[in-house]
Length: 563
Image 1 (cartoon, one colour):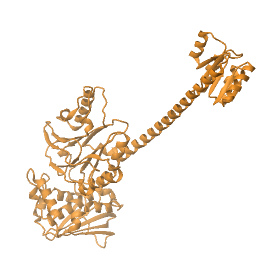
Image 2 (image 1 turned 135 degrees about the vertical axis):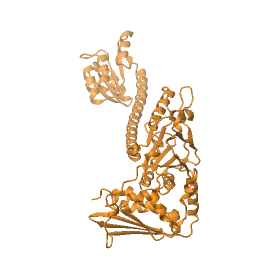
Image 3 (image 1 turned 120 degrees about the horizontal axis):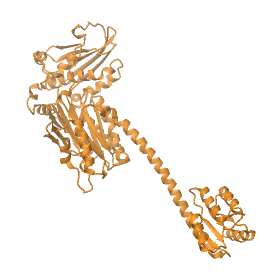
Image 4 (image 1 turned 90 degrees about the vertical axis):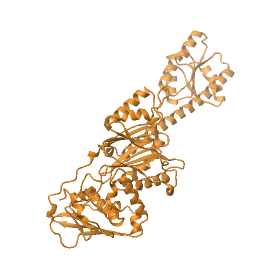
């Protein structure tokens, strides 16, 4: 150790100084209090041995200034003094002095005190090093949390959570939430909502749910359906997260055009649908394991569907809300949630639930992340069919070869396994003159392809959709026939033409079916579960024509606002 010895008596400096050096310590000398302060600031010793009575500045004042100058660094000061008056020694120790040794010096006592102080200095040094390391770790952790929070906000894409039919809220138990709410619309305006709950809370739980965002948004944007997105999200979780990590997840798809809700629930509390009077219309229990537990081949993709006819609130929450406890140990529970979400519009139901939870907790904190999403299931939220453009039936004749052609010929195996429309939309997205019309083209392709597959190849009748359970029966029969399909073909041709300085897309779809009676095409009813798709295509297109027995259809589309 480096020891500063300050005494105005040369003989004392000589005696004590040699003794300190004999103990193996480095010695720094000062003649009085002023020099002691100066040498202390320059040499930064580990211990100061100092006389109390010295010229220019006494030991007590010098000790006070040394303490002040050294700041957070602890430098013990030991008075080596002939003053035996207890009150003066006590005053000195109350100000800045840590210990004292009386003159004449007992070198055995002095050695013991130096050794004891050395142990304390080393301990203090370790504590300070640990404190500095903790401070550095804290700063680094705060920076990591700040980056993670920014990353989550970017990946979650909060702008998409501003959907007019969606009202949601997340309250993290720590600085970052392990709960995630993500929402987006497909090009066909179907609302996809995902509520994910990672294990635990904080940064670790937040990192668990991050891999879900990329496939959710990317595949929703291209028009993939709920089961296909689930497969990719499950694959991501299995690929990225360590063994033993999994994510509870609820995935909801709301098709306002066909008035259909589709739900997959893997480990999230019951999802509830309340009517305007507070009555429970439907409950979706968790029927699947969370993502990441099962091998991909064992993932159950079966969903539950519900056809809605009147306005209602679809309520989804994490277990952190239902299991929130007040000071009395009571849980918030499903009954309080149901009461808060009943008889109110979705936005007011959300606000009331937040307020009721705050009142219930009465200052207590939640021990898990809390998330709540309420979808306003409003049948009138469907956008009206677009008006026929001024081109309408006045579409000029176009001749010659198109600028480009995209042809896809699909057999039974491809029809069973491929997501055809999203596949084509990948090409459309890279076609600059059409990319801004992504939504319109998706709707046209979807309706024409589904019409060719369902009514042409699979020979399904739209009459099956009638009745309360008609749509569910139709979809189950469709899945069964598609899985058993051995023969059948659909050919899709897209061509781009320059027409009066504008880009026109020609879509021709041909199926191998027997065709159908086309008389109903002129009597589409938007209120019925069938016929509206063709009406939509006709409204979007500059022209729409069926050929032969109805198994070939051609739509010509001029992007709105294209110049």
